[in-house]
Each structure stands twice: as structure tokens, then as C-alpha cells.
Length: 149
Image (cartoon, rainbow, N blue to C red; front, side, top):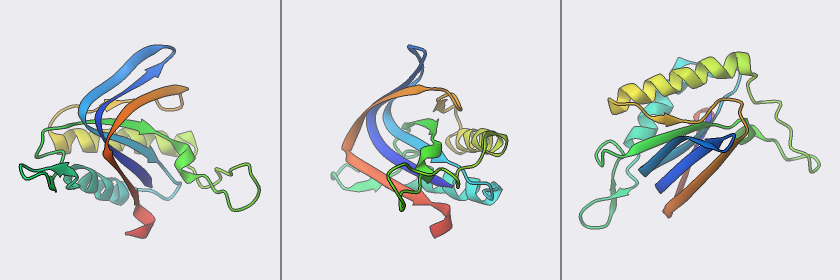
């Protein structure tokens, strides 16, 4: 599983011109799944996301997590995180899980993040043509790949 975490002051996602998810101050998380991802990766990524110390403390040092700051999370599925670009100019997505595998993993990640934050996160719509808007705060962008743990 690969996730791209961005600290944002605001973010939203639209489907068919309608906002279906939006947050202020928190994390915009893009998640891409592979066929062999499982509950272990969900647990690992959840712990990393909610405990990443990338928010400023009272001294202006990145020392607080989204949990500590009571921030929000907007989770977007994004199979293109698994793009392979070594050959040619057209990316290959062969490593990205097909919907029958990815959708249950996406739902498990949503439930896991909801539980870890003790409240509902915002989400996009799996497989939809989404328009994501964000204001990256910092900018702070973190890449997590469970195959590299």
C-alpha cells in the first residue's frame, strides 16, 4: 500500500461538480492499494497517519500529530500512486489492485481511521472522476510505502 499524506489548511473533493468531502486543518491522504495488501498494512498505515508528528507545537516545531491537534482527515483512493514509469512515457498501473480487491481495503482503511480518530473522516468516492482541491500547509508532504517498512 502506498499513501501520500499532505498537511493542509483546507481540502475538498468534488464528484460531478458537487463537494462530497471537505476538511479544514488536517491531512489530505491519497491511498493506493496492491493485490497483496492486507489488514497488517491497514493497521501500519493507520498508526503512521494519525501519529505523524507534522503539526507545529507551541514553539513552532513539528512535534504534534493530527490526533493531538484534533485535526481532520480527507481520504482519497488513488490507484495512480502505483504508476510504473521506467519504460516509455505511458505509465503502467499493473501493480495497482483491481476494484474487487481495492474497494474492501479502502473501506477497511476508512473504518480504521475512523476508529483511530474516534470520529468520522471525510472521503472521496472510489473509482469516480474526482476533482481534489487543497491548500498544502508548509508545504508538508510525506510518502509512506508499506513495502518499505
